[in-house]
Amino acid sequence: MAKVKIVGDTIPNIPWEDKPDGCRDVLWRYSNNPVIPRDAIPSSNSIFNSAVVPFEGKFAGVFRCDNRARRQLLHVGRSDDGIAWTIEPERIRFKCDDPEIGNFTSGYDPRVIWIEDRFWVTWCNGYHGPTIGVAHTTDFKEFTQIENAFLPFNRNGVLFPRRIKGKYVMLSRPSDNGHTPFGDIFVSESPDMIHWGRHRHVMSRSGGWQSTKIGAGPCPIETSEGWLLCYHGVLTSCNGYVYSAGLALLDLDEPWKVIHRSKSYIMSPQTYYECVGDVPNVAFPCAALCDAPSGKVAWYYGAADTVVGLGFSQVDELIDWLKADAASDA
Ligand code: BMA
Image (cartoon, rainbow, N blue to C red):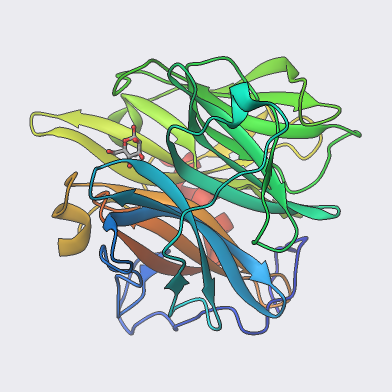
């Protein structure tokens, strides 16, 4: 029984592996990573930065599959155990009332979350530059796309799992049309998932591993201590960008208020499959499964823009680590 309460699902079959003896990590990696290879479907160059959710007692998700023309596309995947995945070879064809918006050019870095009566998918959508695409589904067969949430340029649009004070709430990271050498996290609200406003600043880039830019990762996890947010941070080294991940706790009612924020990364690219691939040195979390009663959290992250990795952690340990790290002089 976890000390910190997670408000969320019970997932008795959450993928899990106990922390190895002697491991000092708070977020430890699955011993058989990567869980999805780059060539899981015939057309793929790489499969990474992808989102999964519990679905009908099993698991489903939306996967970033860059094809061999190096076009960024979104595919459905399904799994009985959250570890062995079958990715559909055909990409998602969104239904959309407005051909201007429904004219899909590219999509990447999806997030998926259940809110009230349906799954919502957000992703980085090509519309005269990157912005935040939004669609919903109930069955992972038919996806209905609605308006883009924001003007270009924006990335890392990440929804909260419930309305706050009656409004849908989304984190995002305004950016540029390229590889964006800057970027901070903002939050916006909407009465209807179409009109977004009341934009508030959440947090800016900071030192070290998060000094170039930051962006929200998986959809925030509601806990008795606040919204637990895992976010990525980027360091510019003489060898290019390095993508690591850290944690923050946000106020439950006013999520632009940061209660704690990690100074250290909780995960950085250190294994072979995170350091070697199409874009070396990238660990990019996009999804978390949480089993509320046990406090188990399973994280899915893109590794080196090439494959999908899985990691595990325990909510009490995450919060204890975050508080200690935030208060440290790291
Ligand atoms: C970002 C996004 C991510 C990618 C990362 C590293 O700008 O494009 O999809 O993982 O760069 O290449």
